[in-house]
Length: 69
Image (cartoon, rainbow, N blue to C red; front, top):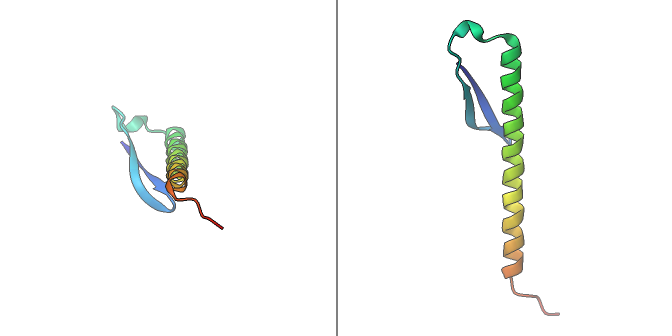
């Protein structure tokens, strides 16, 4: 089994767990693939979080009363 952390802004927010039937099947290339996959997932989590914050800011802006000069 491989357990790789998922990072968001320098903080571990989850883990990616990859199970194998036999421990001897875990090669260095499979380990590198798992680390690469965890980096992709971490990046997607950060992008998703940024998009959520942007949408929330846009909604808040629409709800705010217009300023009068």
